[in-house]
Amino acid sequence: MQEIQVVLVGCGYVANDHIKAWRKVQQARIVAISDLNENLAKNTAETWKIPRYYKTLPDMLKNERSNLVDICTPPQTHADLAIQAMKAGMNALIEKPMAMTVKDAEEIVKCQESCGVKAGVIHNWLFEPSVLEAESLVRQGLLGPLIGIQVEALSPKEDSMAANKNHWSHRLPGGRFSEMLAHPIYLVRHFLGEIEMSHVEISKIGDYPWMISDELCATLRVGNKLGRAYASFNAPRDAIFISLYGKRAIVRLDVINSTVNFLDARKTTRLSKGVDSLRQSSQLVRDTAKNASRIAFGRWLSGHDTYIQRFAESLIANTAPPVSAKEGYFVVKTLEEMCKQIETAERRD
Image (tube, rainbow, N blue to C red; front, side, top):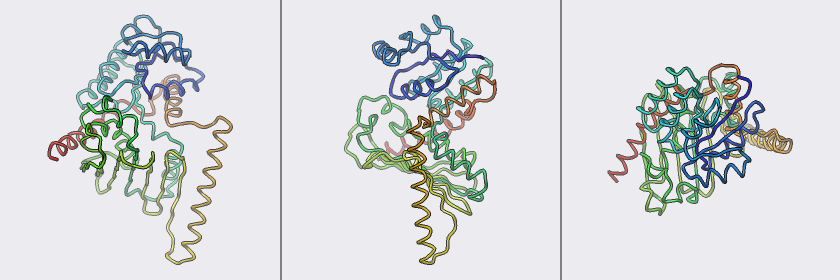
């Protein structure tokens, strides 16, 4: 494959991240987009100077010569669209979560295997700069054996999905939480392994009547290891923190600000605490300077940028995608279980 001809389905918020990312891939070109809201498709095409727009995927597939369909629609539509694309001989790139049910996820995997095309899933937090740096530390053995992970995803009540009572996320099993829970699930799987059990607790603090719950704490068990996810829609600001616990050291990530704090073993003396504080401060200064340089020289890459670049490379080299449909299936399996627990708890409350 010499050039990737991309058609994109769905012109909502996340589509802009995909379009920006594809613009950074030299071997790729977006040739058309579609959305059931034809005016939105037209406006998006004009904004990004994309040659053609359509209302439906079948119309686009009928009229365009492409080799990849990028799916940016709500997750409950992913299976139908991905299967249409793959049966037409196209590779598929699917936003997270890959699907909302195990049944739909199984159908995607089966279709991908039978059609002999590639299907990749956007698990973009895995490819954020801070997470990639933490992964490198883990690979080098600097944390020692991993024993746990904690993911905090905090949003203010003004979150664009939570604040809009008509947003499609509120109609999903598990509501607004189900749209974002794939992130901590795939992070726990990536760093600890296959998830065996999950337990979810929810509560209500905010005053949106269309949200039955807006705080969530989940525990994910991987053998004798534990992962923890905390999600809030009542925070004073957006924040994503990830902590990786090893037997030798801890790594604390601020994903939005792209900083990595490496906390190794220390003594409990006052001097050791002082030295450790200076070392942490220097790490923050180092990361801030590095990030400023990346932005100033146009080298900043988001998780979407890096994933889409690597997915493009996998298409050109005919290698496995960075996140496969089969991996997407395992994430959906845990997500479906967690959403059922959320719904049960909300009915009980």
